[in-house]
Image 1 (tube, rainbow, N blue to C red):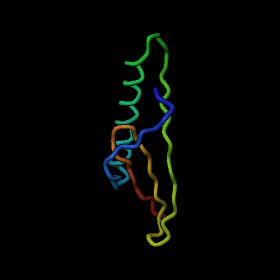
Image 2 (cartoon, rainbow, N blue to C red):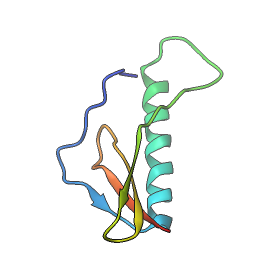
Image 3 (tube, one colour):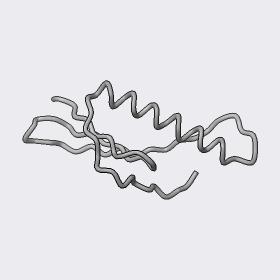
Image 4 (cartoon, rainbow, N blue to C red):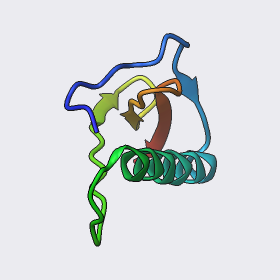
Length: 81
């Protein structure tokens, strides 16, 4: 897997928390499958690393949570206080 994160060209997508979790899991599994496909050696496990950003949204009284993916747009959801 590449050490460099390539953020998708598409604009970020704001989704509800339940949909955000589903999309997050789909992207984790996709990244793991790609890592397995790129390997030349057999291994017991695959490591997937994601970077999450947390940002307070004072106007909405919520916490913005976002995560970037290599091929999909950044996913954003909001957690109420």
